[in-house]
Amino acid sequence: GQNIDQPTEMTATEGAIVQINCTYQTSGFNGLFWYQQHAGEAPTFLSYNVLDGLEEKGRFSSFLSRSKGYSYLLLKELQMKDSASYLCAVSTSGTYKYIFGTGTRLKVLA
Amino acid sequence: DSGVTQTPKHLITATGQRVTLRCSPRSGDLSVYWYQQSLDQGLQFLIQYYNGEERAKGNILERFSAQQFPDLHSELNLSSLELGDSALYFCASSALRDREETQYFGPGTRLLVL
Image 1: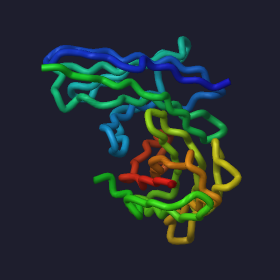
Image 2 (image 1 turned 45 degrees about the vertical axis):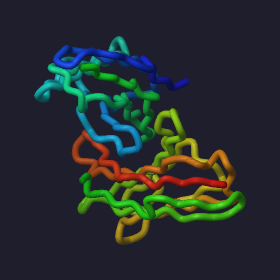
Image 3 (image 1 turned 90 degrees about the horizontal axis):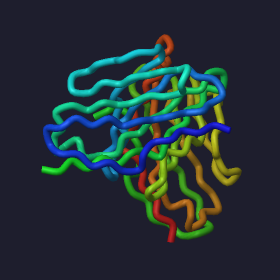
């Protein structure tokens, strides 16, 4: 079967660093995406990984290991506005389907 | 603003009824995706269209159907509505440039079935 696992909830302190993990099992792989979604709003694109390694974009970095079926999103210098759900999604090759995890709800405390 | 528009923003209807949700993709994007997100649930992929043709099908019920028109806008039709169909319905579009199929999401249509 196809599956994406993420922790349901995480809590961190303003100014800290947090790592949100994602493991996946899919038939084929064409890239892994991270999206941010505030409650009741649309998901917004954060990062894309298709090759192994780390992609850095400002305060956000994303890592991928295809052999391990593993990715993480690293958020540095946390701000209150980072409180949101973070969705891990995999694009499966050949079927053009996207599979989303249920998301990790991050709470940033002052 | 992602550039993807969806109408209506809110929809309240009764069980057994039929509704149509509309999506206009970003300028130049050929792919449109539809997703359902129920309360505290992840995004469930429903269906994808590329340049007017159905490209991939996910967990879409037989009571639901969609199409993409020549001007690339898309409609999702939901019929014989049930209480459990109450959800946020998102449309997304992508350009399918190279291998990076980043999807840009519209603001969603919140459907409430009473």
